Length: 506
Image (tube, rainbow, N blue to C red; front, side, top):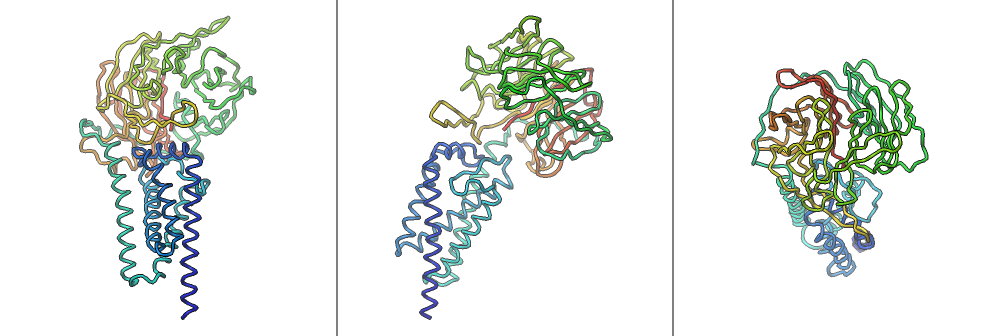
């Protein structure tokens, strides 16, 4: 009997010591890299609103609990507190993995290199350890202890669920607008697994879809809309020595272009041999580029004059390329960078630039010379950007947090129409519809008005990564799988046009 009591006390002490090591290491790691921890919290879709409080509160709580675990008379109380804290950490991970629309970086110093699933298993093990230590303790009956553990579990899960429900309502729900859905606007053709989640749509023309690869920037894949022919091949550029960081390919037959805005260079080659030479070098750094014709390229960039996002046109000339900016097109609301961030499109049929803001219900239309034409409103009602910006580092560096509201996520244009993907829910809309579909709102850019909305169906529990339209076909990229639909002509104006798309980048 005495031996059993000795082993029981040893087990409780050992589990308490494990928790002391866990909490002290976790708290110290967070405090030593406090700016990174705060930034990670600011990017969380659940906790960004409370990042300032939690960044201090969590390590402080961990240290206090660790101290109480060392003191014998407070040890059992501290074990209950440890159990509750680990339940809350675990509930947070479960919500992030299963219900959040994006998964942020793992927060916290302890075993940072574990992925979210491994972290979940780790937490469950420590929950079991705390529960075991509590059940082995001599306080109260096991029935009472199990009841208290169940109550603490309900409290921990309930608190995180309430935070999530509030966050979901705040970000996704807007009862102030109502969509007009066309139930059978598309005819399903088929889908195709690309084999990697790193693909993006680089071009779509005459029933051939071109895919670039984020991880292999000089690699292309083609697929026909009939799903009958697929081809993989490399492309080459004439200069491999520049410090490229995010090279992207645009295919606009008979040419293809390779651009990297962190280096002021654009290469061009023909689709006959897929060899590209320098087309423009030194004209401008840029965030996005769009092809107007054989001598002009539109860009979005950061203006040296205003330090805000601006639009420009690079013109190819025999001696030196020229660059023209119009800093008066995009309107600053807050910082001029995040609040003006958006997607640049070129509509070749009407020779118009379309710029759709990410964070507000507005798109801007200019002519080919960047002369302002008009601004259009989407059906959403967020006219002023709702941004959650976190400062990090010793310099003035900022990053968007998880509670920023993205109004317009992906866009495409074709003929007279602008297509905008938004996961913002309007009146009477059921969020479960987004579990296996994406919402597309259609606007008439000639009449400057909203027309209707439709769903793009795709595999369950995935998000749209981009889409394009050419003639009467729509292709959607979802988690490495391409979905192909035919547009029903009675709903869509598919006049002759060259089309590009934009998409939101996390």
